Image (cartoon, rainbow, N blue to C red; front, side):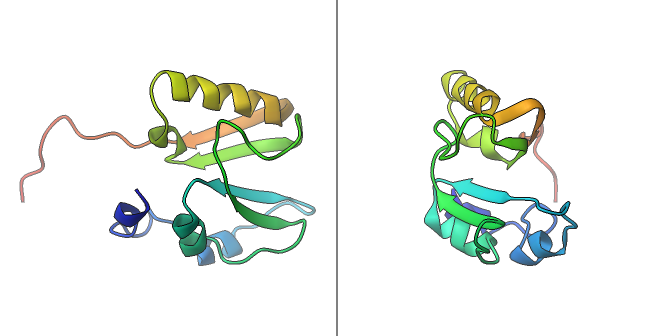
Length: 118
């Protein structure tokens, strides 16, 4: 999957620059989790202790305490898990990690029903 990811460009493939340019609320903590070290290395601009960290891991077992985040975002993350079991585990883990009133935002990809003509 990481190999195919490099074939896409902006805006479908965010860059480290995109992450740096976003205006995050003061004292925001960002944790990037991906199962591929190549993906983390290619997209993540750099770690900043406490404020911005990237790790290899799985959405089904996030390496954080329960109720420790206000927002979880996933860019194609739901597309990388099995259906329906993997998606159910992702939802359960997001529920565990989010504080009450927290929000899960997922961007999902779908294939068109028709083939585009050149």
